Length: 152
Image 1 (cartoon, rainbow, N blue to C red):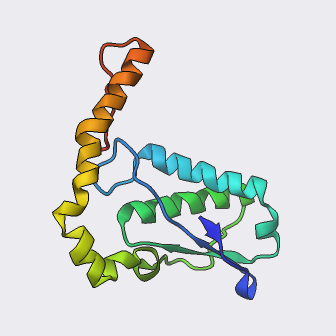
Image 2 (image 1 turned 135 degrees about the vertical axis):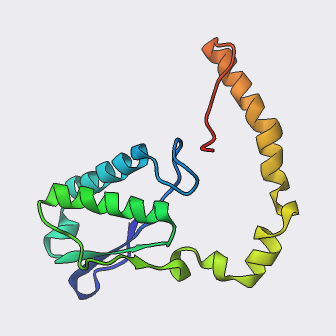
């Protein structure tokens, strides 16, 4: 999240979210919803001046369902903390061209996304490095095996 300006007395917030464990593919977990709501409340607590002269906030999100859920939860936190509706509209602006620009780039899609060889480092990390890290942590915690969810 970042503020990009105060054009026409509006605070523009671009919203990007992340996937949390224990949710289905592409879904935001309940923990993620709560974290986003709490984050919205903390933003108002720490930066009330952002909202004092602004009649509202325009929200932009990508089209992924978890991004939309994150944005709605964040907005709810803002609204709860301010005691008023902060959104400038009842619709959500989905801006994949801005937030998922790489998906619209033919070079990225063919050279990276559809090219299996670009994932070698990720595969190496998942198969070699990550299990070694888990074993070292388990030893430090003095447990037989450390079970960590990868979100799947």
